[in-house]
Length: 188
Image (cartoon, rainbow, N blue to C red; front, side, top):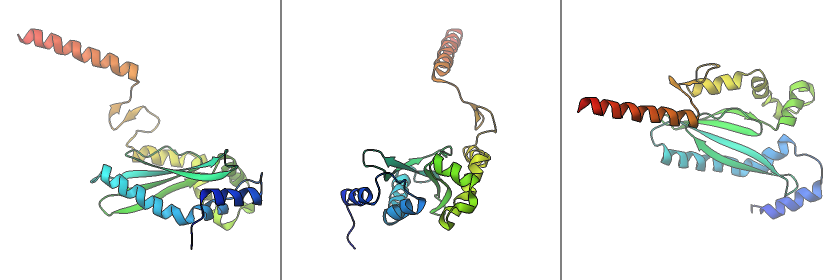
């Protein structure tokens, strides 16, 4: 089967409807062919960057306004678990077992709010995402994210180090330099 170009997909979308938002089924169908392949590419690129470490793969779904609602996925790799946000899927790569776990997938904010209160009206495919949406709104996803990043709950402590601003970091660096100079003078 020959793959359609972006222009062909765009024209089909325009013909279908100029104003109707894409459903979750349409988005998943649109990306089904390339999604897994792109996930594996992101995994392989991440393995080159961090050959002996776990890492996270973030898939952000963006609806292009220029192309009248054509969805696009942007793939990112990161050492830290990204905070939960709408229109995102997050995966964790485990380097020891060479496996990928899906942590969560969230639809757009509008769709998430709709699904949150109208569970009986959503399709079976969208029901699979309902638990992720519920976990987002009750704070469970953020708690999981913080746990995976080694953050202490509701603090600015990350793995025992205080997280400070760039301005404060400069001040600390200057103080360290001053102390080194004093130490060197006392030593000589």
